[in-house]
Image 1 (cartoon, rainbow, N blue to C red):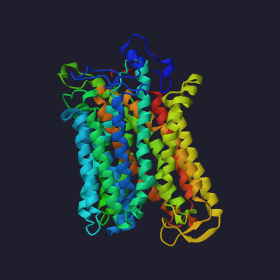
Image 2: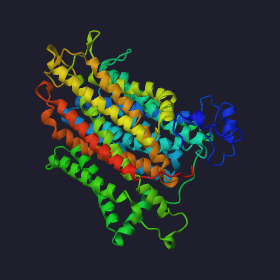
Image 3: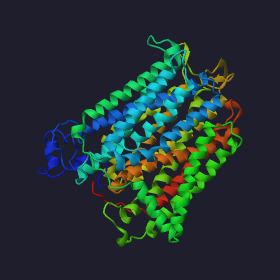
Image 4: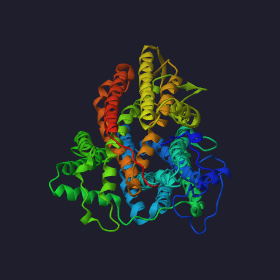
Length: 588
């Protein structure tokens, strides 16, 4: 199978429909075909090689959704502190919001499979998202600042909207391609890289300006109206994105509804096999229950920290997540225990072969996500804190530590086209640069990012301490004289690591899923992110003595080294799982 960037070696026969579209300068607005054209279908050409015109509107939705999402995430803690929350309470709510955005993904997948279809689900949940954004803007109006209005908007409606969109939008874009040709396969793989780049284009705008506008005002917007302004901007972007998305309704390749829910069918079939006495099926069923409990404990600890046993919820979340991952991964490595029973098959049901093909992907999804998360969470939890104790002075003011997240986003925006058009084709000619090799490169660069942050931390602690207090570190914490601009290096490297891991996992999950299971696979990947949060939140808590409020009194570098080792262990598990994985070709 050709991989992204190798399009020159994968051109189809000149007489094929794909070739005729390419020679005309486009691929057809509905994609590469795959399903019958709608009656009112009209060809719309695009000059962008192997990018269906319809996919541009899909990328607009993802870009705007991420712009809004990271605007909310990047300002939530500061806004909640204005509403009377403590620093720790605000941080916990921020973590809970992220978990909820991923945990609701299964609902979004179910809605797309059997109720509304992917197109209607994206539109409907997008409108829910926009409503949540408008409620957040209303809650931030000076003089009102309503906590309950904010909670309804940001902790209920926005997570629901995010989950419904994220569970379907990447698959909907991939659906626009005809993978019956080598060129279609290569183009579809490239789409996931463009998709991931659009994510970071939105987050770059959010972190690069909107979060600062929210906390400080600007462009004629007074500081007290900052949060109202950025939340209103986020809402407008979401409404615009949905309008752009709907404008291409007539040219989308839309798959029909399934007869039944893939989630329900998998659960029923595994439970039925477990009832026959199958030990692997029983382990898998128990593992899923533990993972659900881990997510529940994680959210409960965040939203209700004053409960009597709240301090135990984090540990319970960790134990349930760890045991749950093992009890899901081990039985699914070889799901041959789920034996086909033809006499049970009924029209509209999923075959046991489909279910087995979904189950065999779970070990890759879990180990791959956990391996990269061990490194990525160093950036999410610690890079900003480290930057806050470096010299942040610039042009008579202080930058925020979160400002340097822009380097991560820009790395993805700049490096994605270079990787797809130059680096990947070159490596593909020299070696077998497939999923395994790309993910390995991403892990190596991400590990280099973490190690560079550790080295910078050692240098920072040796540099003189300034008299100036940091505005983003805990109160009373002074900055070191080492320029914070050095943190651009680890942030940038992490971005390079992302473009060789996240799109690879997304494409592998899509291409190796039966078409009836693709929505469930995408939703499951998001739920794995929620499980990862539960695991690494406890890790951060356990390493807290090494990372005090004043980093000069601790050893943050030890935390970095620990994460590199942990990521390496998960990566070894990923390779072990991949060694026994046989890639298949599924009909688009």
